Image (cartoon, rainbow, N blue to C red; front, side):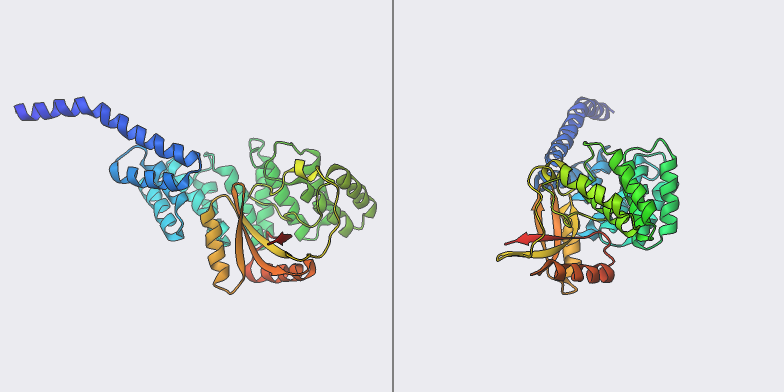
Length: 350
């Protein structure tokens, strides 16, 4: 009896110190993660998960370990562990959303649809509802299910409480109209984005929207409107080279800042000179694991694929061509065969 009492007293005395050490270890791992020191963060998270298997921080640790995993199957395992062990919680919602986004990044749009649909059905009161709407619209559009994509678009826009992804969803809606051949409707959507654009918007590259607006007016037979916005574009973005921007709505951050596009004289298109070439960008990821997955998938099919890190993005490119015309033709075939709807042809150099 005395031994039991002594053990209980010792546990009570040391419990606060153990809890403090656990929290310190967790905060150290999160600090490394937030500083983007992912190698150190991965090691700290792994050690934490082994040292504190019953920790209250465990679900978030598992999610972060999943995000940092370089193997898709390993990432899935971490997220499934969260889904199984923390059902009907915010953690499960986050894991479901991240699985959907991972499948979207791999071009597995049907699987992505299932996960994002789960967010809309079971977790509509969580912070993941808006990005789930956005990616689900993109997934449906990629599968040519534009009628359903437009229904979701209308549903999202009708809810005035949705605001975080509103500009990106509007751009996706305009792109859908363009692909359906409804060029006046598309022009109206692109024009709305331009008229309401906020300089703090990080995920829409405005010159690309101008390009699509001009193209929409051209295809709608409204050359006067097209010419007006050509002039506006040259005046507002003298440093922007036409034909170098992402065409469809992209979930990644705009590759070039609007400020940079306004900085230098407006150049003309030219063939690649010695040491230069044209290539097709097919992805831009903040998590290099997703870029690696895409490279492996395309390389297995014999496609010449390479990556380039620019800021916080790892960009995936396919092919090297002497002229832009050759790259454009290849991009059309690549898009059709690999079901890649978001791509851009751009100039590169050795």
